Image (cartoon, rainbow, N blue to C red):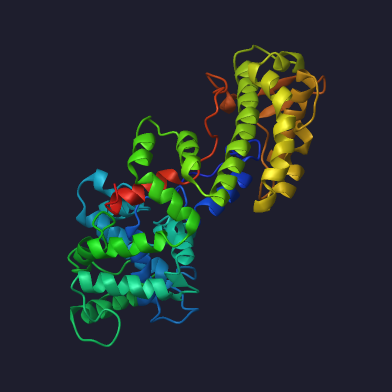
Length: 430
């Protein structure tokens, strides 16, 4: 079965974050732009979650499908995704729709979409999983119920879509659709799968009223209003859609988040400047470590046989990092203090923040990598680079590379400007 873009295959090797740099970067990104995640592309899914929350409120909190695992929201997600796949013929139109390949395969095979045919971890990679944190941050959904923002958004959507009666007591076509959709969810729970055939009118409902590409004007304004309620998120978004921000963001391919932050810092208030400086310093530290590690991988990839720490010590990245990492680490202990990350920095990176000769520092870096891999859940991951009893190293074949580090100041990690730009595009702000 083909994997969807939002259902990446797992690996026991631990192919991501070999130096344990991601956690602090992610924490800073969460505080800079609350609720936003890199996987997010289309803000219309916030409306889909509001609709889902309203529909699923008709079911008991502990209600679950006959398969013993699928909750009402999950069943509704199957219907939404299948409906959008059925009614969008252009593959490009389905970009950013989690689970689209799974739904397309189910339709092709004429087998109802179900937990077995859908994403392996839908609570993470389905659209509820991808956008749920933002929906809760914006108070669209709270503890499985519509929050104040969710009710506000759903009311605007209902009025703009001509679906009066979808929520509330007023009569209208929305009331009939509400019943039709809850009936579909109930049948899906009983059958543990999508329980409607190709001719069901509900597929058109998904296209006409919940397409991720066709957000209503008033609905979009309402979502924009919610996004602007946080001071940091508003400042980043307002600068992004300004003439200067747009120019900087679109001036390179791919865009440079570092250059964008440098420009934003000039007009930012004191608190925003402080977190941007913390990010800048942490990313320089991360770049030094990543470049050193990548240079060592390249050295191992281009050398026949084992490599000694002395050879690592000649790598450009190692020579730069062993000189500068300690000073940056000291600077970071203060810069990360307001964001609660100083203890994690010290716990994770004190071992490589030492003034040592290049070859000894490289050995510390390799040991750091081994320790980080061993700590990964559930039972640890194998290191990419193996150390032998004589102190030499070899790289495991799947981690060989054709080039070393970047040796520039570009960020190692992402800080949510890309999804914000996609949001701004969908919302008509750029």
